[in-house]
Each structure stands twice: as structure tokens, then as C-alpha cells.
Amino acid sequence: MIYVLSILCFLFGAIAFLMMTLKHKKEEEYYDKFYFIVSDYNKLNDYLSIRVKLRECFFIIKSKMLIFLNAYLKNKKYHKLVIDAGFYRDESAIIYYLLLLCTFFIFTGVTLYLVFVDGCSVVFIPASLAIFYIGSKLFLEKRAKKQLQEFRRNFIYFLDLTATCIRTGMTLTASLDAVEPILHKFSTLLSYQMIQFSRDLKHNNLDFACVKLQEKINLSEVNDFISTVKNSAQYGAGMHSSFQDLAREIRMFHFMETEEKIGKVNAKMGIPLILFIMFPIIVEIIAPGLLRAMQNMSLEILTK
View 1 (cartoon, rainbow, N blue to C red):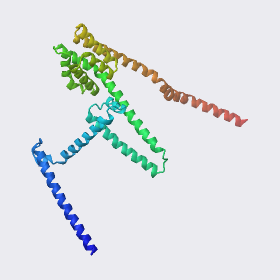
View 2 (view 1 turned 180 degrees about the vertical axis):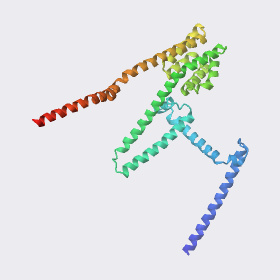
View 3 (view 1 turned 45 degrees about the vertical axis):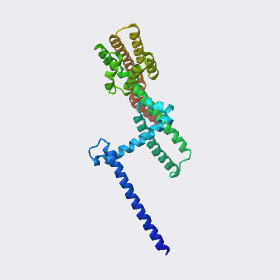
View 4 (view 1 turned 180 degrees about the horizontal axis):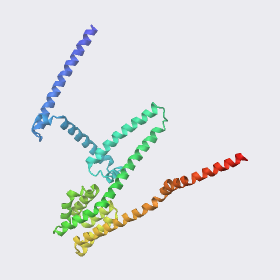
């Protein structure tokens, strides 16, 4: 009797599960057809493709991560370091955090395997976590330095393009709008900061935009650019000639820095030259005569 009741309960549960599944599937098809009507796709199969579903899942994850990012990570020092490293948009920052999270899980799994399987010390767990955190910060700092170097190297081209636009009769804001679409090809940091500078010029005043740009990028090239813009706005000097002269001076300064680096190469190569080239050559020259003298001395001792 008990077996019959259990079989009947199992069949009843299976039938109920199938009915609920079919009902849920019909509801999903109804909602899919409704969203397909208001979507940009021409065919229902294109809308129901795996690529679209994955994109929707990524959009949901991105929205959740964006809420978490704005609520908990926006004012943290680590997030500021992420922005300085080149992840300026929220989408790129979210992708970085997802990759960092995946790497963290893999790194933690390898650490736990080494501790509980290979018999490593438990102290290895906090040490490995500290190494992971320090390694991620070093990666971001190195990337931020690279962004600054690209900014310095390509800032001259920005000045040349802006000067050309001003020469045609454009204002400074119009020139910034004209050169913004191509600045990302030179440097992502340059493009991002000039977009922010242009927005501050439009929605605030020149002094506020210059102060904010100087706080974000504390370089001599940016300070000279800000001084040139302020002098041109205050005294009415032509920005075209001022930007051209500034670009020429910065280019000559970069040439001087390059010559100094080339001059330091000889001093830096002196120690490796002595240790790895001159010293082996001296040993190779002296060694045969020294061995011959030692052989003669040993023969004299034997004859005595």
C-alpha cells in the first residue's frame, strides 16, 4: 500500500511539474513575442538567439554591478586608481572588476589547493591574498604611468590640431569639439580629459575648467597650456600662434629629454661592460700565462 501511494505521489508531482513547466514556457513565449514587437529585430529567431540572450544577461549583470559601483566603490581610493589606469567609462570599469573577481577566485582556489592538499602552511592564505592585492595595485599604477607617458607624448599633436582649428575661425570650445573624435587614437587619457575640459568650459567658466584639469593632470605641459589659454583670454592674444609656439617649445623640451636619456645610456652600460665583457677578456688574457707560471713552479718544486 505504501509503495502504491509513493508511486502515485511521484506521478502526481511529475505531472504537476510538467504542467507548471509548460505554463511557464507559454508565459515566456508570450513575453518574448511582446518584447520582440517593441525591439529592433526583424525576426523572432534573431531575437531569441543565444547571442541576444547573453547580451541581455550581461546587461543585467552590468546594471547590478553599476548599482554596487555607485553605492560602495565610487569614493574608494582603489576605484580612483582604476580610473587613473584608463578604465574611465563605467562599462570598462565593470569589465575590469569582473575579470579581477574571476582571477581572485582562481587564485584563491589554487591557494586552498596548495594549503589543504599539498600541505603548505595556513599562513600562506593571508600572504597570498596580500600578494594578490598588492599585485593588482602595482598593475594599475604601472598602467596609470603608461597613460601619463602617452598623454605627454601625444599632447603636442593635440595642440597642433587645436591651433589649426582656431586658425580657420573656430572658438576654443568648437575646436575641442572638432578634435575630440580623433583624440582616442592618440591617447585615451588625453581624449577623456579634453572631453571633461570641454564640458567644464560649456557648463561652467574658464577658471573652473582650468583648475579641474590641473588637478587631474599635474604635468608641466598642462600647466603651460592652462597659462596660455588664460593669457589669451585675458589679454586677447591669438590662441593659434600661442598654441603653435607652445607646441614648438614642448617638442624641443622632449628632444632635450631624449638626448639626456641617450647620454645616460653610456654611463649605465659602463658597469655591465666592465663586469661581463672587460673582466672576462682580462681573465682570458691573464689566465694562460698564470697557468703556465704555476706549472713551472710546480715542476721546480718536484725537481728539488
